[in-house]
Image 1: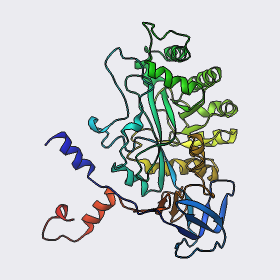
Image 2 (image 1 turned 135 degrees about the vertical axis):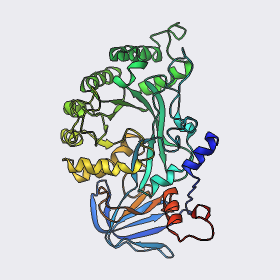
Image 3 (image 1 turned 135 degrees about the horizontal axis):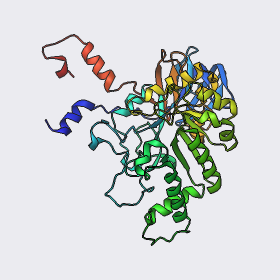
Length: 420
């Protein structure tokens, strides 16, 4: 059997579709706006043309509009899926289905111009798998390949659209995981970053025999150095985070920290620098020497200091994006206020990533990306009963549910595997 056929058998072929945009009125919900209005009891949300038009009690229903009775159940913005490779990865162990990293021939310069969103496949089998869990958007992340400057990614809505929204994000990785890409020393990472900045800002000649960037790469990096886009840095050790804060202040760049397992040690400094953190909220034991200070209270301590906290998984996040709710719930169980946990899956990532004008809160003028739940969305005992993206009713089906239903049917003349 060819590797291609094996991959198809592993992933299956499921392409969920959405209905056309609809107007609807969701009645009598517990509306967690994740915004200025907070939580509204027994409230209604009016959607017209795919956009939220009104939020409040006893809203009149326009003629011929679909009415959904929530019966007091929680309604939230569609959730953030974290930093993932949904749509740029199908089978993590099958290289030809993974497009998240660039590794060029030896001697090639660093490539900040590499943009993983160009490989995004909205028909990926992983999209409906994420959507049935109430997830409406994710940040496509670039992984380190031949350089600790991984490349660019961006936000995609899981509505079947092919294009990202909002500004691009540049990904870097620092610390012991990339020592092999930086001269076997984390000190060399700062040396190389200083050279990259020098090239992008014209302090180092473009024709230098030791140049690290292509002309396009210099232009791309210069854009981020000018504040046009955020640099997301995967880093864990407190000492490295301290150097990162100093570098960002010196170079006047907008950064966010991803993972940040020892970030709590520098919580006041991170808050003063107004640097958001995408926390690995399940890290409770040292995985390596950069994580000696791991604690389940990381998110709570950062929030208490005034840091904007969101969440991200690290390690097969694409296939397990549903666990992002568990990350937030785990942080709440360890001291993070519940409202902050929900905002870390809605408002905060949307604002940090430059799409807060469209996503992240339930308010008039925002896209009608909404999820209705059986109960507390941060408790994994509950599930999303319906997801709307841009006012479209999303089928709550995925490859997994299709397989479940197939094998729950009574056997017929043919084996279940051959049944439609």
